[in-house]
Image (cartoon, rainbow, N blue to C red; front, side, top):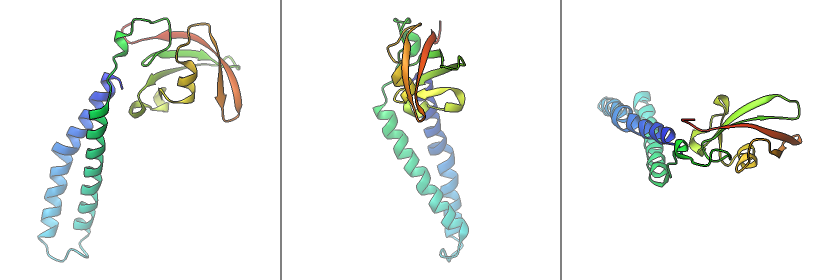
Length: 154
């Protein structure tokens, strides 16, 4: 994942562990002190939220421990598409589109960030400007042409 993606996951973990979880623990303690827990919505919701937070914290810790952080700005071979590249390409309809190849946890199609394992990223990896690539789509296939490759800091 990119350094920015790693930082975002670290921040989410910090937010959950240092801010959200203590508030929910306080709510659950207060709700438990009221007595009957079987019909206490605050208690039941709080316990459920606490389980959700703990599950996400475990996931984030494992993900951060295993993450390989790759800084795209340090890429020396900028004439080819590698992890972290922003690639502009044109389809058969001549419409230009740009995507940035990111880690799985950073992918957000609405921003144009695609996972390195996505079909479009896999088709583009290793290509150069001017290369024609066959992209498999749900509607069949499409030939796209790589128009530009950019890396952060270039």
